[in-house]
Length: 383
Image 1 (cartoon, rainbow, N blue to C red):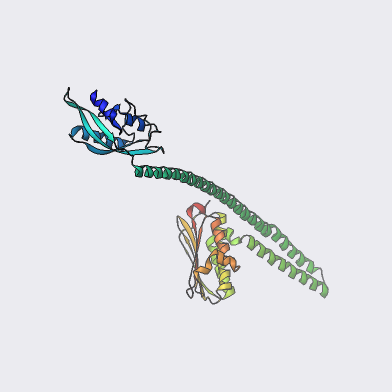
Image 2 (tube, helix red, strand yellow; image 1 turned 120 degrees about the vertical axis):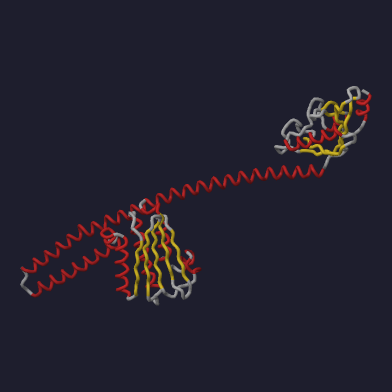
């Protein structure tokens, strides 16, 4: 009792603790500084690592005959010392302390630790803890912002995927309609023109005047012109060779006819076994080859040789068009630069290939010619 009275008279916070950190007694200064640390409460920190450190500190105090310096991390006097003060943003205070064993002479064993706190708390620790709280708050705000960005990006990706699906359906519907129109022109209108030609031939037998024959010749010439225009329109809508012979022969025929017209040597090669191809894949690759040959005439008139290769694989189909023209800087082949100078050929090819899920690349250098690569993956070939 005399010892407790002496402890109460000391003007610095002092606790008597059991080995598990439970408060047995506190003096008046301790009650003022930490009013919630009442007898029966525990000063043991809630965080596992801090608790292990403090328990080890109490064990050292129990085993030593001298005062052991240490530190106590505890909630501020306004906080709840029983809460998880290290797991949230409530402030912690670090006290410097000294602990010494208080022996019960009657039992001859170490029973309690006399823990004296320093007169002032560790202000530097308080400042760091405040900064840590601010950082935690900022991290939470950043996480909410990041989660919002992720949700926005996911929604945008979903919208883009849905847009691509709609565009693909429109693209296929457009080519299906063009195919229908081309067949109608070839089958129906072509038959009518052929019938008109036969009618003019029969009519000619009943005409005896020179003027009548001249008129029939003029009508026959107009009919031939109409027939040629219909074939041109039908070819623009859908090359008949694609339906009759397939992509390889259609491209080969296109390259050979272009070579005869332009007087440029060509080399066509086909490798691999042709898999089943969706209609839009065939027409897209054919149109890309057609546009590439047109570009060579426009922008590489000095080219003397052109190579076209169609390569079939199990996982992809690729089209390569290479010329030995003057070439140019690759910087001029970006979409922005091409649109700025109103050169839409490369841009159109890129868009056509992208529309069906393929990739399109251009390799060129000044004086080194130009090579175009179009590749369609296996997932799009027979889609």
